[in-house]
Image (cartoon, rainbow, N blue to C red; front, side, top):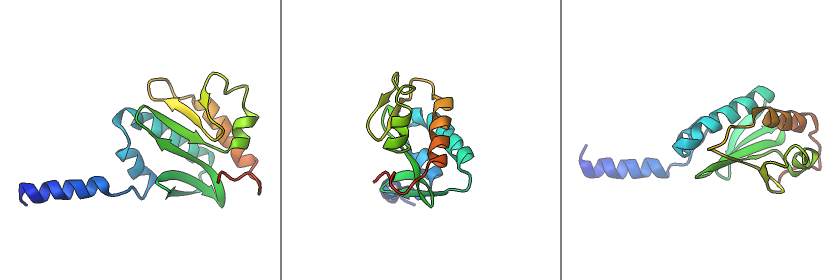
Amino acid sequence: MSLKSGVIEAKEMARKRPSTIAEYIRAAPGEGQSHLRQLYAILKSVAPEANEAIKWGTPFFVEPRFLFAFSAHKSHLNFAPTPAVLEAFRKELKKHKTTRNMLQIPYNKPLPEDLIRKLAEYRLRNMGESDGFW
């Protein structure tokens, strides 16, 4: 293989979108991979029977409806259970950065494992017809 074909091959691989959560985590910023692996392990332990998918470029857990998703960014990750779950834990989330849909976790701070587990378990127990993410 020539250097030129190797460069082209590398560029094509870089453009390839992840098709599994493991691939997504490997493609994420290096400083966030530890947090992402921890988050994935928590979510998998809470919902071991859930289907895993990459939808719109984002890892999702589905059972059979949307359970939760997460996404990697340059200096943080977002965990998205649903707005209803975040609202139910509004007091516990006061010291964390949130939006209506997501909990933002900086890579330079410890992953709030217990809180994430509580959010995920609550979401699994309280899955309803009118609480979808999108």
